[in-house]
Image (cartoon, rainbow, N blue to C red; front, side, top):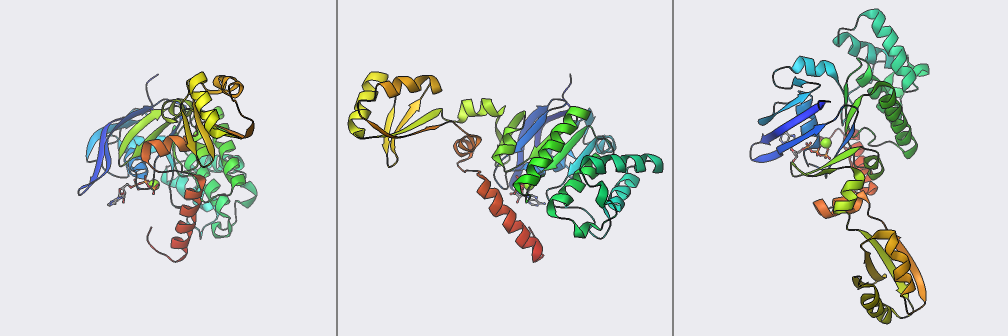
Length: 327
Ligand SMILES: Nc1ncnc2c1ncn2[C@@H]1O[C@H](COP(=O)(O)OP(=O)(O)OP(=O)(O)O)[C@@H](O)[C@H]1O
Ligand SMILES: [Mg+2]
């Protein structure tokens, strides 16, 4: 099958800043494709270029078979987008927000009614259809934005940090909707996130930093390649003797640290019994660490991307919003 998104040498420059710098990748139909990277890496800029919201400086891209430069209207008809910052009209009701969107997409009145019912059911907002959006919680607003993104039955849904600011329960609900949607409609999803558990749910992930894609693979593939392998931390009654014995008998690399001995297990779990059996001294504490996507980020970008980063970002954004500061 032909890729549903194809990006070739795409760049976007702002003066001397290369927000997106010669990026190439493709997305298969039905994939959940994640774009991950630190703040300012170029994620939103790439999404905006693919959604025809900004003109690339160089390179080309097709979405659903249409060139973003020469067929922008066809691209727009084929996609739904959930923006990083909320774009609902909070003075209108849920129904009015959706209806307005349907009018912009030239959906006939009867089709609009039916689809609005359908998407409101999908995101569990049917009972609140005539409530003013200002009275919605953050999670409800995000769900309404998702409903709006789906109203015109797009082939590709772009989600820019769709769950930012949501509590864990709403986040997990949102993912249930997304998975159900993919199973039902086969929609392709292109998303950015700062949450590691969400990245794990993607079929493939592109890691982007300073406008460049620095790795692209499945979550398991990324961990295998860049995670640094399984790591055993051991504390024994005699760490010095243990370190020497393990280096000689098991030929593993052993590093002494404050937490104890750090042992790199090249063949993961399989190497564990051998190491434990070779221990000459009583084991006091043991911890086995599998590489996480956070380890991958740390190695690739030099920065961690733990959930706390996202939480701090959430707080900063809501503070800025509250005081009407530019983000
Ligand atoms: N309109 C603009 N004019 C000038 N610079 C811009 C503009 N839009 C984005 N940039 C810059 O381009 C770079 C990439 O921004 P972008 O919004 O794509 O990052 P991001 O990966 O989405 O970050 P975040 O995780 O914070 O959302 C940043 O350095 C940003 O300051
Ligand atoms: Mg962004």
